[in-house]
Length: 287
Length: 305
Image 1 (tube, each protein chain N blue to C red):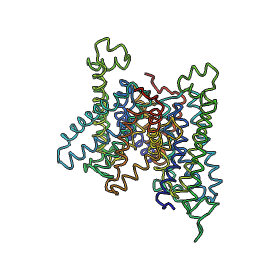
Image 2 (cartoon, rainbow over the protein chains, first blue to last red; image 1 turned 30 degrees about the vertical axis):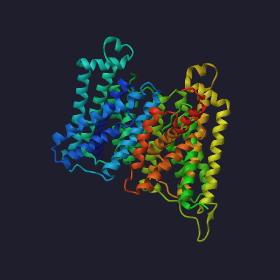
Image 3 (cartoon, each protein chain N blue to C red; image 1 turned 90 degrees about the vertical axis):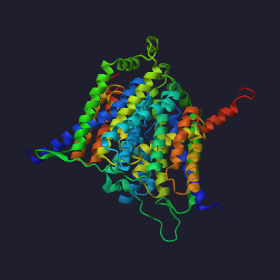
Image 4 (tube, rainbow over the protein chains, first blue to last red; image 1 turned 180 degrees about the vertical axis):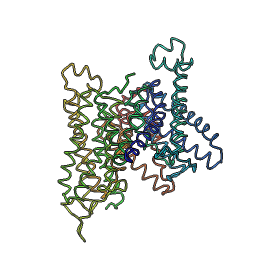
C-alpha cells in the first residue's frame, strides 16, 4: 500500500472514532430537544463541569477513576435536573427563542464561574493511555475506549427508550405532549427524568473527553457549537439522524484536516452544514 | 476636562451601543442571529489585512469590507429566508456562520497571525496625532466624535426602520409568515433588506473597533463568544426600545469595569459570572430588558396594579 493511502486510511478511521464520541455528545442534547423541545446551549458547559469533577476527584482527592467517573456522571445528572427545575421550567410557556437564550445565559455563568473557581490554566488528568498499533497505523487508546463507550451508550439508550415503561412514556410525550397527561403520564416528572438522563449522558461524555483533552473553562466553546450543529443536521430530536450526522461531520473534520489543516477540516464541516440547511432544513430525518 | 479612562469607557459604550443597535434591527423583528460576530470579524480583519499586506488605506478597505459583508449576508440570508429557516434553526445556522469566520481567520495564520491576533502597522509619525489616510488617531477626542456620529447614525437608522412600512411588514412576518405572504408581503425581500442594513452596521462597527483598539484577534472580533455577547448585551438593555441596546452596552461595560475597580484583578471572571446569572434572571423575570421594563412601568396608568 502506498504510504499516502495508509495515512488517509488512518485519517478515515480516526474520523470514525471521533464520530462515535460526537454521536454520544449529541445524544443527550437530542434527547432533551426531542422530549422537552428546548435546546440547551449550555450543554457543553455541563460537560465541562463533569470534566472538572473527574479531574478534582481523581487528582486532588485521589479517588480511583472507577469511583470518580460515576460520581461525575451523577453530579452532571443532578446539574441537569437543577437546570431544568430552576431555569427551563419558568420559561417553558414563553417564546421558544427565550428558552434558547436563557440557557445561553447559563453558558456564560458556568464558563465564568469555572474561571473564577478553577482558574484559566489547562488541567490534565495525568492518565496517559498507550497508542494502539495496527499495521503502520496508530490510534490512541483513549479514542478507542471513547468509541466503544459511545456505542454502548447509544445501544443502552435505545434499549431503555424502546423496552421499558418509562422509556415508552418518554417517547410518547415527545410525540404528543397534549394527550399524555390524559393517559396518566405526568409531563413534569417525565421532563425531570429526561433532564437527569440528558445530564447523565453529558457526564459520560465528560468522562470520555477528560481522557483525551485538558480541561479549561472555555473548552465548552470548542466543541459546543459542533454538537448543536450535529443535532440540527441530523434533524433536531431524531436520534438516528444525529448518529449519522455525527459520523459525517467527523469524517469532514478528520479527512479535511488530513488534506489541509485541522481548522480547515472544521471550516469544511461547518460550510457543509450551512449548505445542507438550505437543501434540507429539517435535517436528515424529520421528527 | 475628562480624563482618558472615562473617555475610553464612553467611546466603548457608544461603539458597542452602535453595534448592538445594528443587531437589534433584526433581533426585535424575530430574527435572532448568532452570526453577527462574522460581520464584525469581516469588518475588522478585511481592513487590517488590506492595510498591512497591501498598504490599502482603511478608507478603501472599509468599502471592501462592506462589500464582503453584504455578499456574505445575502449568501446566508437569501436561502434562509427563501426556505423559511426561522427561530432555533436560524439562530443555529448563523452560529455556524460566525464559527466559520473565526476558523477561517485562525486557519489563515500565515496572513492573519492566527489566534495571536494582528496589529495594524502604525502610521502615526513622531509628534503627529492624526494620520487621516490610515484612519489612525492618537487623540481620544477624535474617536469620541467619530463613534458618537456613528451611534447617532445608528439611532437614526433605527427610527427610519421603525417608521417605515417595512417595520410593519416585518412585524407581521415575525407573527405569521404564511399569513403575511398571503396578504402580499414579499417576505424574503423584506427580511433581506433589514438583514443587509444590520450586517453593514455591524461590519462598520468592526472596522471602527479595529482602528480604535489597533489590535484584532479572531476570538474577540468573531466567533460564537462575541456573537453571544451581542445578543445578551441587547437582551439586558431591552431590544424593543431605541436606547435599549445602548443601555445594555453601558450596563455590561460598567458592571465589568466597576467590579474590576472594586476587586482589582483578583477575581478575573467575577463580572461575567454575575452577568450570566443576571441574564438568566432577566430572561425569566424581565424579558423586555432594563429599559423595556422601565418603559412599561412608566406607561402603566396610575392606580392600576
